[in-house]
Length: 605
Image 1: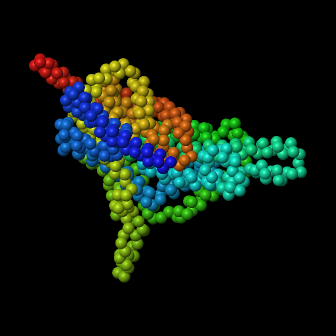
Image 2: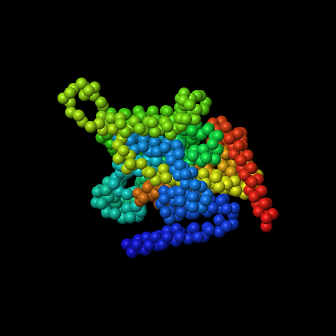
């Protein structure tokens, strides 16, 4: 096995080297076949897309390529490329990540999770619902990966209290062949073994013994299947809930912020998308999807069984649920009473959310109207709140200290230290966002977006409602094999130009594309949360594929429903906006310029 592992590593290293070396050479003809600037920009984008999809380079390193390639190829000067890596959108995301670090630092997330699980109950279906609600709530504010990593240990502890220490995912035949001592040691046996049963019924008829032994073996197999399915349902629900929950807020996942940044690049006049308006649109969608996803997972993995819903619960399962309830209660009690630091972080977190919602809610004047228009953005709010974390004391301050000259001069420990923030904030995501914004700026300045728009004529006859479904399906399938951040960076410029061609509000296509790239449920490699859950060893690829296929389908249909109902009133999707019309006029003038340049060059020939 070690030799095979070493061989695989060598093959993968050679593969990465070949991709790094061959991709730029293979794509060179693009520069020659297209107009100079557009061809060069498309060349850079395709090279980055290949590197992102194959991970030949780390994602963040690939995101830095525009800083080098755009100036060298004459697409953009460096003084226009570099600022794209630290737009106000990046600082909004950074403030969310720092707030998440403070929540993790003081275990506030664990307290919230255990409290929710205590409220929903310990029946398997209810526990799955509690897991999904808690994970999705955390994922609204923390990264999807961090939310999954936090919830899986809690899920494993509850599962072990329900079913014992034994891994429920092992082959059922192997479990049946194990000896009684090992089963008892692992606390898995919930019914008597054959030998135990025969020993206690030696005076009975032989035929009766055989019949009961068969019944015991059948019950044992059913019980093992039930355990394995519930275990799978628990583990698979957590990454799915993280992916769904991340769509509810602008800071929940990177693609949402990339949409915001690219809107500012392509359509500077668009001001309808902010933290509050996005939440009003995406939160109901998240709740609907969570509810349907919970019903599907619970039905598929035995949490909800329509045939046995009226059957009286066995004493064994009641006892297991009592143990799970005790474990949750014990873990919550270990946290002790809420500390001053937890209360302070919770207050600042609530203030963070309220100020973001109320800055510019659109339907009423927000608090930003008290300042110079256009000066205060969501990034200003986020950075202002998280700055407090670095000086606010983690211990309750005492007034006596100021008047007691003999009191010791102890150092004030803040809620969050900069060292801790450095260790926990995923800085690579900031660079990845910046790479996306730099790519969008290159598309705009080079005229590549105009060139793409000129080649979308065949799609002009597609009804907008059908276009929404097609866009979501294509992106949801693409993101199963590629990073969702890389996917949306590649597709958003195309969707913007397609919307202009269809004469519909660009948000009508760009929002479904953005949310659709978070709906990656079918493969372990689709998202980091899927990979984390799969690495536990209790799930197989076919489990994720079977469950994720319907999840993807539900996501596409619910997103289409949302875009054609309440999203229309929130984002004014029923009309072609003036800010998009100005962009369309610029495209037309640029296309005319391109035609004139082409004709003049032909006349010279």
